[in-house]
Image (cartoon, rainbow, N blue to C red):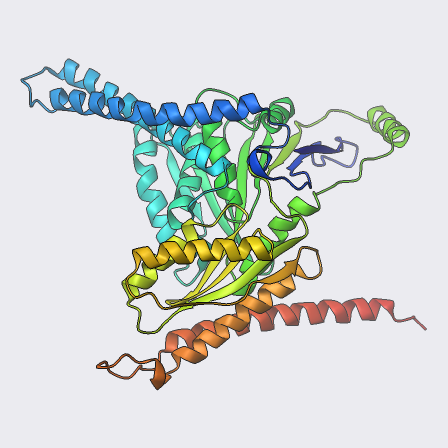
Length: 497
């Protein structure tokens, strides 16, 4: 991983207070082609570290069964099934059950972290209502917050018409992990804020968990960047999993903290239709080809600047430090191209069979792949592969699907190669996703040749038309904003008389 730091230092002067020093540490992937064991190994990670993670995962599997036996045995005594116990004994056993539950969560994280690091996440992304995610998160967090009277406040996430492209269970776990870490450093009776706001002209939703804890120093954030885990007991695996889950939603994990003030951890999810999925994924994927770089000031100029600032400094505010964490472990196999294509099932295939195929297709995807389900029986797939490897993977998925699904009728398009660069990737992917969405909507409008024998004719549904109207509305708004910006720039370029 490449670590770079940008420091902006200001001080309180005669004109009043100004923002404190800001330290930005960027942890981004190196651009390199890897394969085999090296493809599964983090840059800079030793074989011993890789073996340690594997041993940890295997040990976790071995621990889970006896841990379950211990917890259920304690529960039998606690519930009085084996005889009467007094209140003191019951309270002690309840504490033991709570500790078993915490240990079970740690074991679960140990099992999951190896799967995430090796690039086989088994994610199932789809368009999910923001309000349904909020409800699931609130229900999960209630046992964490109630014992210490911690208030979980929401800012946003209250519009039922807003959807995000996410794996519902993974996004819930990501936010719950971040809030659980925030609760640990929050005083009893205080609050933790979950803020969800639209960014990038509605292209994405930014999720931010804000606490009022003691904050994290610049040195500790640097250590988090280097070690790729957090400091303190029990949070390391949580942070490792959080950054992987964030990457599965095409976003790095950003930690912003100020000592004595608190910490904010944020990530983004696509929220503006198929074109936003293409934009968010392309931006995230291109970071692995062109790591984010920040110009470092000339040493002599920086020293002189610091001397001038020190001369007029009265005091310095606590610095705000930012670290941006990408995913770790597996690396992209191809640094300059991706393979993409379409797959569809016959209209005679039942909905249950289509859902089974969707699960197979999505869970067979790797860290740098994604699958976009256009409708019940149509998908776009994007693989980190060349033509030959893509064809091999499609044959493998097809073979497994034919075993799991009776009388499978599936049609695969030929793979097409899309270059990875700033100019073409997002445009080509957006064109593919939007064009196929429009084509699928046209098919759904009522083609009698796609009706199964013995069933009623397909009725036209307003859902597809509404979705297309929403997408066209978003594109119109974005084009209007861009047109206004171009007009303003042109006006500034005109010579004044």
